[in-house]
Amino acid sequence: MLVITRKQEQSIIIGGEVEVIVLGIFKDGVRLGIKAPRSVQVHRREVFEAIAAENRAATTAKAPIQDAAALLRAAQVRKPHVR
Amino acid sequence: MTPDPATTPDTSPFAEDGTLLTFPKGLVGFPKLSLFKLFEPKDSYPLKFLQSVETQEVSFVCVDPACVKKDYEVPLGEEEAEALHLETPEEALILTLVVIPEDPRNMTTNLAGPLVINVKTRIGFQIVLNADKYPLRFPIIAQN
Image (tube, rainbow over the protein chains, first blue to last red):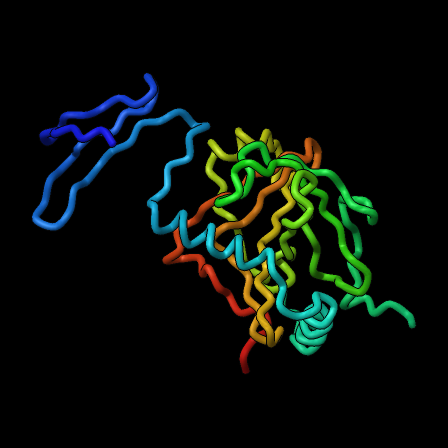
């Protein structure tokens, strides 16, 4: 891992097109600004991991999908249709 | 048995036997799998399977979130709409992934990570939304 010291308002450039700027340094956190092309997705790690975990969980149905579907259809019929 | 109009899909943009979809960036946590077949197994409406073409063991259960939360909307930024080449909202198919636990009454869907697919180009992306506002585990069967 590359470790670099930066001060407020200084930045680093990654791959020539992603810039990470230190906007502010506080007692318990650092505020970063990120400039990246539209094709580069930027996520907080914990959000990214939570979605990845839900994705993995969605690959293993622990009950037959038809049973789940029947429950879902029954629940929909009971619900009044509000528009 | 006569199909009940309340539980039968009216129109589907995709063929019954499955449609090939491309996710150029894969799904979150599955970046290398980009080619999927979307299909609805027998007696599974409104649930669908998104089956990886590259890795047979990987398939996701998913649902049209409008079936489970009528007012669900994906705030699609201009940048994302552009990446998807969406010209009108009607061109977007939204799916959310479903987790089916041992007791399927407790199944949930992930409203924070919807799949947005352009029905014309059949290219899709998984969008990551703010998990504070969009639940990762939204209970599908309302617990009354």
